[in-house]
Amino acid sequence: MLQLRRVVAAVREQNGGRAVSLIAHSWGGSVAARYAGLHARDVKALVLFAPFVTRGQAGSPAGATTLPSHYPVTLWAQYRRFVEDVPRGHPQVLSEAHFETWGAAYLASDPLAVHRIPPAVSTPYGPVADIGAMWSGQQLYDPSRIVAPTLLVRGEWDSLCTDADAQRLLAALGTADKEDVKIERATHLMHLELQRGVLHDRVNRFLARVVQ
Image 1 (cartoon, rainbow, N blue to C red):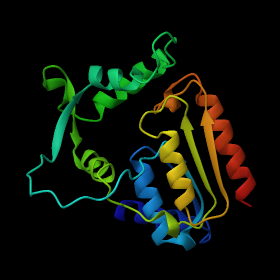
Image 2 (image 1 turned 180 degrees about the vertical axis):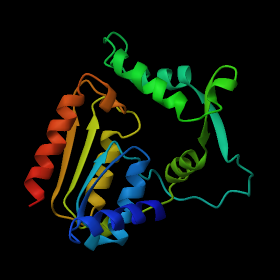
Image 3 (image 1 turned 90 degrees about the vertical axis):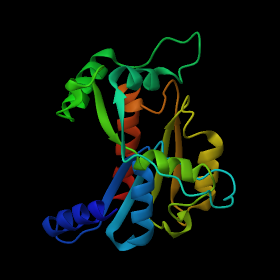
C-alpha cells in the first residue's frame, strides 16, 4: 500500500490536490480498498473489478510456516487459469489476439523467464498468501471505513468473486452510494474477453456520475 500512497501523492501534486478515483482488479482490489478506508480524503470514487472478499470466520492462528518469496508461473498455466471458469458447452470468451499480446508482455516482464524450462515468470507469493488469509476469515481491509462512492463490477462466471462475495462486501461498505454490476458471459479476466467493452462502459458511466 505504500507504493499506492506514493502514486496518489504524486498525482495529487499534479492535479491541484484533488481527490482521485481508484480502479483496481482482483487482488489489487484489497490494496485499493484498504487505501480508501484509511485515506478517505484522498479518494473521490472507488471501482473494484472482481475483488477478493473475506470468506468465513477467522480461525486459530496457524503454525509458523516458511513460504517462498516467489514461484514460477508459465504462460500455459496462465491460459488455463484464464479459461477455466467458462461453463462447459459455452464458447470461449477470451480474445486470443489479446492473450497473445498480453502473453508476450507477461514473459517480457521477467528477463529470466526465457531461461526457464518451460519459460515462466517469477511471481511474488504475497498476493497468494493474502488471498489465502482472506479466505481463512482474516480481514485485510475494513469495508465499513470506505465512504467514497463504490462500484463493484464482476463477471457472471467469476468463481473468485461470487454473488455471495458481492453481497457480503456491499452490505459491509460504509458508503451509501454503492453499485453492484454483474456482466453476463464474463469471468475474472473480463478485461481480456469479448465483454471488455461492456466493462469499460459501465465503469465510465459510474465515474461520469460520481466524479464532478
